[in-house]
Image (tube, rainbow, N blue to C red; front, side, top):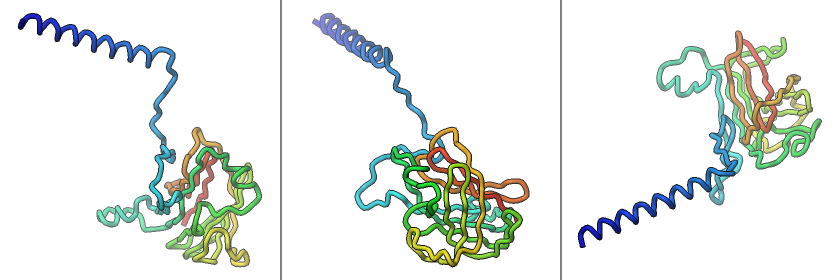
Length: 211
């Protein structure tokens, strides 16, 4: 009886192994499903709980991660700039030329107007920009963006008083190697200064500045 039970157990193990092998073969043969680890700026689009903002607010600094560096007492450069914005999602849409019409103002984000603050005077395109806090918005075109600094703070969306525009800059745009699911703004060191990098869908624009 003991030997018979061992034999039955052996048959069960063989049967289970065969089933697993068969499933692996079916999954592997003829399957073209590829799992890709999302790149920077790309979302897996996990459904959000009710009441959670689809365009959460974010903040970027130059130097990068300045608050963390300050807490760690590891600041190598003085604070130069900070941008506060909300991050809308692509969600399967064609953004530039469709959702965002060329030649029409865009808030460079969602919800409240995007704000940028300079903690010292800077230079953009040989033009001095005074230290201070500004609304930052954009007029996108297919091959360039016009970026505008405005002093009409604490506004929602694009309800901005254009008579308070104080600086305008035109910068080129480039195509990215992959689409960015969420609108992303970040600072990076560049040459003797830095640049504000803006990316969404398959478009990237950079605003360089020095001080």
